[in-house]
Amino acid sequence: MSNSGTSLTIGVLSEQNSREHRVALDPSATKHLVHSGFAVLVEAGCGSEASFTDASYLAAGATLATAAEIIDTCDVLASLALPSTDVTDGLAAGRTVIGLLDPLNNLSRVTALANQGVTLVALELLPRTLSRAQSMDALSSQSSAAGYRAAIVAAAKFGRYLPMMITASGTATPAKVIVIGTGVAGLQAIATTKRLGAVVTGYDVREVSRTEVESLGAKFLTSSVAAGAGEGGYARPMTAAEQAIQQQELADALVNFDIIITTAKVPGRTPPLLVSADTLTELKHGTVCIDLGASDKGGNVFGSIDGETSTTANGVIVVGGGNLAADLPASSSLMYGRNITAVIEALVPAGTIAIDPADEIHKAIVVSHAGDVTNAAVRTALNLEPLGSTEPLKAQAN
Ligand code: NAD
Image (cartoon, rainbow, N blue to C red; front, side):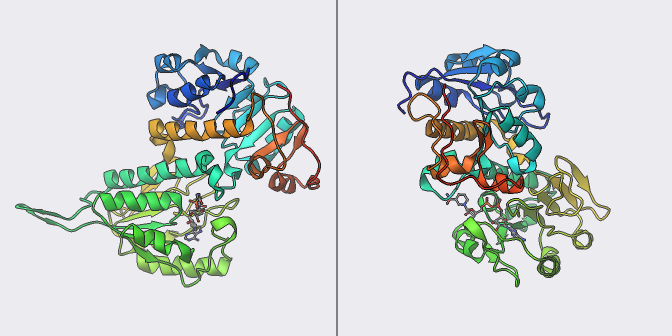
């Protein structure tokens, strides 16, 4: 990287959500940035839940600071989620916040921060299929961690072995696992449950994922109303009628499985309900459902509550796992720190932040800049006129 001579300061605060155990920059990402000439200010204790000590940040070249000092002085705030107004109210115009900021669900905050002159960089909006974007792809890195973790949690909650076990004391049959939604998280859940010895099936509405599932040694199932590939490799939303057919088909299939891991999402939509209340009542006692789609807007499994585990009257264990990457905090933070570093490198080609509206990545991830909401999808959601494609974004002086 060629940022020598940069005078930019990157700040890292402890995440505010009590269920968030990750940190935006780990010591190795810190070392990389310091080596490239950035100053890195970290809040004391920010990495402790991910087992990164203050001493390890100091050894990486960071400076420990209070939250107030970081808010006051950092040029770029690296974050997992959009920080609360307690933090962002203190950011002067020209400051940048990078993270999984969920702008489409935080529209009023986006407007306020744009008016405040804060640059928001939302990693969810990255065009993920560009090869030069892959090192920045936080959705993939965190989904991969979540898929792995889902398999481990499922194995821990399940009352039987996952692999076939032939012992002098008897033989255990292997567990039957189905992973619904075979994107990044689902494929990792398949790979991990396979390694644990289960018999695994992958299910998706995108027929194109069949080869990926089969290459992991799992069987592939799909829906009769599939044809689900939409834009950018994502699934398209299903109609209510299609969803009803799919739920019924799944109900018939799911009774045969011991572990159900759901990861089905459609960008910008509420996750589809795939395991209905009726289906739950049909499942065997001891079946484990891990719902990676769980969110405050609902999930893939009826009644799942993000962050909570419950057991139905018929003995089905339901884990609301909407943020399981946070439960693997050291590995997730390490990968996330690499993603953040790559984004900073892309935005700071030569010492200062230089946002190029003609660059596909900048155009997608920069949500607000120099007083304007700049991202097209966010502008549409806010009912704002599209920005002219030739209209230059004001340069940010640092
Ligand atoms: P996602 O989190 O948006 O969704 C997870 C999975 O749920 C997807 O496979 C989707 O098809 C599936 N799904 C949605 N509705 C469903 C339904 N009703 N029933 C069953 N399954 C349903 O997906 P993701 O992990 O972000 O991946 C999305 C796509 O992006 C994939 O095609 C993936 O291969 C692709 N991708 C490509 C790259 C790259 O090219 N570098 C990187 C990451 C992801």
